[in-house]
Amino acid sequence: MSVFAHLVERLAELLQPLFHASAAAAAIVLFTMLVRLLVHPLSRAAARGQKARAALQPRIAELRTQHAKDPQKLQKAVMELHAEEKVSPLSGCLPSLLQVPAFFLLYHLFSNTTIGGEANGLLDHELLAAPLGDRWADALAHGGPLGGAGLVYLALFAVVTVVAVVNFRRTRRTMAENSPVPTAGDGRQVPGLGAVTKAMPFMSFFTLVTVAVVPLAAALYVVTSTAWSSVERAVLYR
Image (cartoon, rainbow, N blue to C red; front, side, top):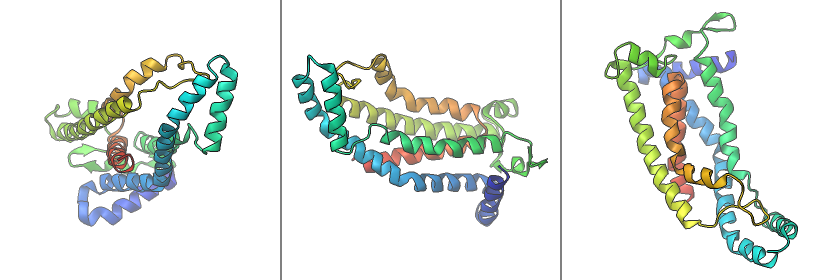
Protein backbone atom coordinates (compact mmCIF):
# COMPACT_ATOMS: atom_id res chain seq x y z
CA MET A 1 0.00 0.00 0.00
CA SER A 2 2.92 2.34 0.68
CA VAL A 3 4.00 2.02 -2.97
CA PHE A 4 0.51 2.97 -4.10
CA ALA A 5 0.46 5.90 -1.68
CA HIS A 6 3.77 7.10 -3.12
CA LEU A 7 2.32 6.88 -6.63
CA VAL A 8 -0.68 9.03 -5.67
CA GLU A 9 1.59 11.54 -3.93
CA ARG A 10 3.87 11.78 -6.98
CA LEU A 11 0.91 12.34 -9.28
CA ALA A 12 -0.40 15.00 -6.90
CA GLU A 13 2.96 16.77 -6.94
CA LEU A 14 2.98 16.81 -10.74
CA LEU A 15 -0.57 18.20 -10.86
CA GLN A 16 -0.14 20.69 -8.01
CA PRO A 17 0.72 23.68 -10.28
CA LEU A 18 -2.61 23.23 -12.07
CA PHE A 19 -4.94 22.10 -9.29
CA HIS A 20 -3.24 23.48 -6.17
CA ALA A 21 -4.98 22.16 -3.00
CA SER A 22 -7.10 19.75 -5.04
CA ALA A 23 -4.07 18.15 -6.73
CA ALA A 24 -4.53 14.81 -4.91
CA ALA A 25 -8.16 14.64 -6.03
CA ALA A 26 -7.04 15.35 -9.59
CA ALA A 27 -4.41 12.62 -9.22
CA ILE A 28 -7.11 10.12 -8.24
CA VAL A 29 -9.19 11.06 -11.27
CA LEU A 30 -6.12 10.69 -13.50
CA PHE A 31 -5.25 7.35 -11.88
CA THR A 32 -8.80 6.12 -12.52
CA MET A 33 -8.60 7.12 -16.16
CA LEU A 34 -5.27 5.31 -16.51
CA VAL A 35 -6.81 2.15 -15.03
CA ARG A 36 -9.77 2.38 -17.41
CA LEU A 37 -7.40 2.97 -20.32
CA LEU A 38 -5.48 -0.19 -19.40
CA VAL A 39 -8.63 -2.34 -19.32
CA HIS A 40 -10.11 -0.71 -22.43
CA PRO A 41 -8.90 -3.53 -24.74
CA LEU A 42 -10.86 -5.97 -22.56
CA SER A 43 -13.90 -3.69 -22.75
CA ARG A 44 -13.65 -3.74 -26.54
CA ALA A 45 -13.40 -7.54 -26.45
CA ALA A 46 -16.43 -7.68 -24.14
CA ALA A 47 -18.40 -5.50 -26.56
CA ARG A 48 -17.49 -7.77 -29.46
CA GLY A 49 -18.46 -10.77 -27.36
CA GLN A 50 -21.85 -9.30 -26.49
CA LYS A 51 -22.56 -8.51 -30.12
CA ALA A 52 -21.50 -12.03 -31.09
CA ARG A 53 -23.77 -13.57 -28.44
CA ALA A 54 -26.68 -11.49 -29.70
CA ALA A 55 -25.98 -12.63 -33.25
CA LEU A 56 -26.08 -16.28 -32.11
CA GLN A 57 -29.58 -16.04 -30.63
CA PRO A 58 -31.40 -17.14 -33.82
CA ARG A 59 -29.15 -20.21 -34.13
CA ILE A 60 -29.63 -21.05 -30.44
CA ALA A 61 -33.39 -20.78 -30.95
CA GLU A 62 -33.10 -23.32 -33.77
CA LEU A 63 -31.13 -25.65 -31.53
CA ARG A 64 -33.83 -25.41 -28.87
CA THR A 65 -36.38 -26.46 -31.46
CA GLN A 66 -34.23 -29.36 -32.67
CA HIS A 67 -33.43 -30.67 -29.18
CA ALA A 68 -36.59 -29.66 -27.33
CA LYS A 69 -36.96 -33.17 -25.88
CA ASP A 70 -33.29 -33.72 -25.03
CA PRO A 71 -31.89 -31.03 -22.65
CA GLN A 72 -28.46 -32.69 -22.53
CA LYS A 73 -28.02 -32.60 -26.30
CA LEU A 74 -29.24 -29.02 -26.33
CA GLN A 75 -26.71 -27.99 -23.68
CA LYS A 76 -23.90 -29.73 -25.55
CA ALA A 77 -24.94 -28.17 -28.86
CA VAL A 78 -25.05 -24.67 -27.34
CA MET A 79 -21.63 -25.13 -25.79
CA GLU A 80 -20.21 -26.38 -29.09
CA LEU A 81 -21.73 -23.40 -30.88
CA HIS A 82 -20.10 -20.97 -28.45
CA ALA A 83 -16.78 -22.78 -28.81
CA GLU A 84 -17.05 -22.81 -32.61
CA GLU A 85 -17.73 -19.07 -32.71
CA LYS A 86 -15.15 -18.41 -29.95
CA VAL A 87 -17.70 -16.63 -27.79
CA SER A 88 -17.26 -16.65 -24.01
CA PRO A 89 -20.23 -15.80 -21.74
CA LEU A 90 -17.79 -14.50 -19.08
CA SER A 91 -15.88 -12.00 -21.23
CA GLY A 92 -18.11 -9.12 -20.16
CA CYS A 93 -17.17 -9.58 -16.49
CA LEU A 94 -13.41 -9.15 -16.86
CA PRO A 95 -13.24 -5.32 -17.17
CA SER A 96 -15.24 -4.87 -13.97
CA LEU A 97 -13.35 -7.54 -12.03
CA LEU A 98 -9.95 -6.07 -12.90
CA GLN A 99 -11.00 -2.69 -11.48
CA VAL A 100 -11.92 -4.09 -8.06
CA PRO A 101 -8.31 -4.15 -6.70
CA ALA A 102 -7.75 -0.49 -7.66
CA PHE A 103 -10.97 0.56 -5.91
CA PHE A 104 -10.13 -1.30 -2.70
CA LEU A 105 -6.60 0.08 -2.72
CA LEU A 106 -8.01 3.61 -2.73
CA TYR A 107 -10.60 2.66 -0.13
CA HIS A 108 -8.02 1.30 2.31
CA LEU A 109 -5.49 4.02 1.53
CA PHE A 110 -7.92 6.76 2.58
CA SER A 111 -9.42 4.76 5.46
CA ASN A 112 -6.16 4.27 7.40
CA THR A 113 -4.56 6.97 9.53
CA THR A 114 -1.12 5.40 9.16
CA ILE A 115 0.83 3.88 6.26
CA GLY A 116 3.94 1.83 6.96
CA GLY A 117 3.95 3.01 10.57
CA GLU A 118 3.88 6.69 9.59
CA ALA A 119 1.05 9.22 9.53
CA ASN A 120 -1.04 9.09 6.35
CA GLY A 121 -0.34 12.49 4.81
CA LEU A 122 -2.87 11.88 2.02
CA LEU A 123 -5.67 12.45 4.53
CA ASP A 124 -4.66 16.11 4.67
CA HIS A 125 -5.63 16.61 1.02
CA GLU A 126 -9.02 17.98 0.01
CA LEU A 127 -11.30 18.42 -2.95
CA LEU A 128 -12.25 22.06 -2.55
CA ALA A 129 -13.59 22.03 1.06
CA ALA A 130 -14.05 18.25 1.41
CA PRO A 131 -11.25 16.08 2.93
CA LEU A 132 -10.50 13.06 0.74
CA GLY A 133 -10.65 10.72 3.74
CA ASP A 134 -14.09 11.86 4.90
CA ARG A 135 -17.48 10.43 4.00
CA TRP A 136 -20.84 12.07 3.28
CA ALA A 137 -21.84 11.60 6.93
CA ASP A 138 -18.82 13.71 7.92
CA ALA A 139 -19.87 16.41 5.46
CA LEU A 140 -23.38 16.46 6.93
CA ALA A 141 -21.99 16.68 10.45
CA HIS A 142 -19.72 19.61 9.57
CA GLY A 143 -21.72 22.22 7.69
CA GLY A 144 -24.72 20.20 6.54
CA PRO A 145 -25.74 19.39 2.95
CA LEU A 146 -25.18 22.99 1.82
CA GLY A 147 -21.83 23.45 3.56
CA GLY A 148 -18.57 23.45 1.64
CA ALA A 149 -18.06 19.67 1.80
CA GLY A 150 -21.78 19.03 1.40
CA LEU A 151 -21.86 20.92 -1.90
CA VAL A 152 -18.99 18.78 -3.21
CA TYR A 153 -21.06 15.68 -2.52
CA LEU A 154 -24.15 17.23 -4.09
CA ALA A 155 -22.12 17.80 -7.25
CA LEU A 156 -20.95 14.18 -7.24
CA PHE A 157 -24.50 12.93 -6.66
CA ALA A 158 -25.69 15.07 -9.57
CA VAL A 159 -23.08 13.57 -11.91
CA VAL A 160 -23.89 10.03 -10.80
CA THR A 161 -27.62 10.63 -11.21
CA VAL A 162 -27.22 11.92 -14.77
CA VAL A 163 -25.03 8.94 -15.68
CA ALA A 164 -27.46 6.53 -13.98
CA VAL A 165 -30.42 7.89 -15.94
CA VAL A 166 -28.51 7.54 -19.21
CA ASN A 167 -27.50 3.97 -18.32
CA PHE A 168 -31.05 3.15 -17.19
CA ARG A 169 -32.52 4.20 -20.53
CA ARG A 170 -29.80 2.41 -22.49
CA THR A 171 -30.23 -0.82 -20.52
CA ARG A 172 -34.01 -0.78 -20.91
CA ARG A 173 -33.63 -0.23 -24.64
CA THR A 174 -31.05 -3.02 -24.97
CA MET A 175 -33.19 -5.45 -22.99
CA ALA A 176 -36.20 -4.65 -25.17
CA GLU A 177 -34.18 -5.31 -28.32
CA ASN A 178 -32.74 -8.58 -26.97
CA SER A 179 -36.04 -10.06 -25.81
CA PRO A 180 -35.05 -13.76 -25.61
CA VAL A 181 -34.82 -14.84 -21.98
CA PRO A 182 -31.35 -16.16 -20.99
CA THR A 183 -31.35 -19.87 -20.20
CA ALA A 184 -29.14 -22.35 -18.41
CA GLY A 185 -28.16 -23.93 -21.71
CA ASP A 186 -30.84 -26.64 -21.63
CA GLY A 187 -33.72 -24.43 -22.68
CA ARG A 188 -34.94 -23.66 -19.18
CA GLN A 189 -34.82 -20.18 -17.71
CA VAL A 190 -32.08 -19.78 -15.13
CA PRO A 191 -33.76 -19.83 -11.67
CA GLY A 192 -34.11 -16.35 -10.21
CA LEU A 193 -32.76 -14.67 -13.34
CA GLY A 194 -36.12 -13.10 -14.14
CA ALA A 195 -35.98 -10.95 -11.00
CA VAL A 196 -32.34 -10.03 -11.70
CA THR A 197 -33.21 -9.03 -15.25
CA LYS A 198 -36.00 -6.76 -14.03
CA ALA A 199 -33.70 -5.12 -11.48
CA MET A 200 -30.78 -4.71 -13.89
CA PRO A 201 -31.82 -1.28 -15.28
CA PHE A 202 -31.80 0.12 -11.73
CA MET A 203 -28.29 -1.10 -10.89
CA SER A 204 -26.68 2.19 -11.95
CA PHE A 205 -28.56 4.04 -9.20
CA PHE A 206 -26.85 1.88 -6.54
CA THR A 207 -23.71 3.89 -7.30
CA LEU A 208 -25.31 6.73 -5.33
CA VAL A 209 -25.17 4.57 -2.21
CA THR A 210 -21.52 3.69 -2.81
CA VAL A 211 -20.56 7.34 -3.22
CA ALA A 212 -22.34 8.19 0.02
CA VAL A 213 -20.69 5.57 2.24
CA VAL A 214 -17.06 5.29 1.04
CA PRO A 215 -14.25 7.83 1.58
CA LEU A 216 -14.36 10.74 -0.86
CA ALA A 217 -11.21 9.50 -2.62
CA ALA A 218 -12.87 6.15 -3.39
CA ALA A 219 -16.06 8.00 -4.35
CA LEU A 220 -14.06 9.98 -6.92
CA TYR A 221 -12.83 6.70 -8.38
CA VAL A 222 -16.39 5.37 -8.60
CA VAL A 223 -17.79 8.54 -10.19
CA THR A 224 -14.97 8.81 -12.72
CA SER A 225 -15.13 5.12 -13.61
CA THR A 226 -18.93 5.17 -13.94
CA ALA A 227 -18.83 8.20 -16.22
CA TRP A 228 -16.08 6.57 -18.29
CA SER A 229 -18.13 3.38 -18.60
CA SER A 230 -21.16 5.30 -19.83
CA VAL A 231 -19.20 7.06 -22.56
CA GLU A 232 -17.32 3.89 -23.45
CA ARG A 233 -20.50 1.87 -23.84
CA ALA A 234 -22.06 4.60 -25.98
CA VAL A 235 -19.09 4.34 -28.34
CA LEU A 236 -18.57 0.57 -28.33
CA TYR A 237 -22.24 -0.52 -28.52
CA ARG A 238 -23.49 2.03 -31.04
